[in-house]
Length: 363
Image 1: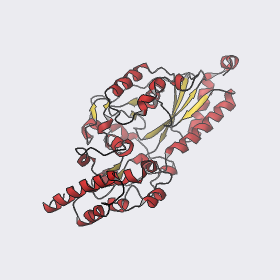
Image 2: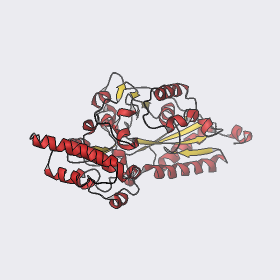
Image 3: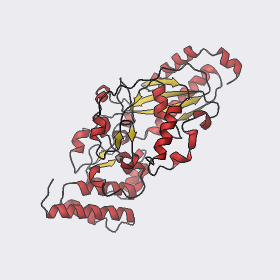
């Protein structure tokens, strides 16, 4: 942005318009921060050094571009962060988790993939800013580059990073997506949010695999969201029984968070459950062939798994399901599946099912 234009910019007036435009575009909150992330960078480097990122090697390859926005987008001095609520009106989460024959999918993935929707809205916001301010440098991000979105959102006043390492808003809980506009506009910044977790440790106590090893410390290698979504290989055997019926992600730490009593259902039709994923049976989903998987997951975040990992995850869930001849028959039908990884998880599930059936264990 030219120096003369910077001097003439009425930052407060533009920010007021940005807030108004954000609401019109369907965002529930917007905040502005500077780009100083030194504390967050040190925590990230220590986390990486300890290997807690598991197989997400790209987090190391990006170096300091993740924690230094001006290295990622030269000229960046401010970040505009928006929040969009996503919690859909769906089948009760706890009831699903307590029904071992049903499949649990993280609430964020029940509807259409949020990336394109939010990116288009953010681009429209950037267009409006440009029309009001004149040409300016910017770049839009929605989980599409090495961006420390939670520390930036915290600095922008949208919420604080809770003990489960997710962002929490006093007004909206944690069921929301984040998106950013990196910009060279010298906008006034918002006040950083304060931590309001207090002595609560509900998220730590509920975590099925103990992935929250200490307040604000997450070990991805034990996290069900990582294991069922990011992890490409075999799921460690000692963790498989702890996954229960969670086949894509995990929401336990959000479900118990007291601040989520303030969460509201999303008004976005695109976030409503698709393909009955909030109430599907494991056996029904396990029967999908590759073509059916591609068809039913079109436009969904689940598509990125691929059919192989989809079957891997469901095989584990079936191993944890109540023993039954129907489950055993479904698993046996997959014993010749081309993927060695799928066959290995199917064999594990079969062994578990048969052993419990022989013992008369119906739990």
